[in-house]
Length: 129
Image (cartoon, rainbow, N blue to C red; front, side):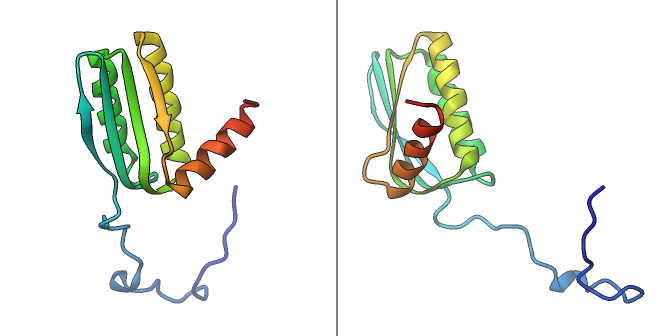
């Protein structure tokens, strides 16, 4: 059992709901994706914004859709990503497994995104690549 310190004295009423923090609202930096290039043999998906736990579902859906289409190459361009969190990395690893099983060559390109370069570099170090 985990114990936590209460933010208000015992016996006092909990703070009013209107003073509690609201859930994270979508921002202009939420991820978007667009197909930058598509042929029968290859698809390039450009990802923009922040890729974190709150926003990763859209990226997962886009990657799943393209892997199911079975192009020869699926390139994920992360050059416009401002933040790539652990949830985003998990989605990329999952896409890699699905792509391999489907015979699709998945290429993840960090581009000029410092956030993506750092996250992918850390992943490579952890995997011993």
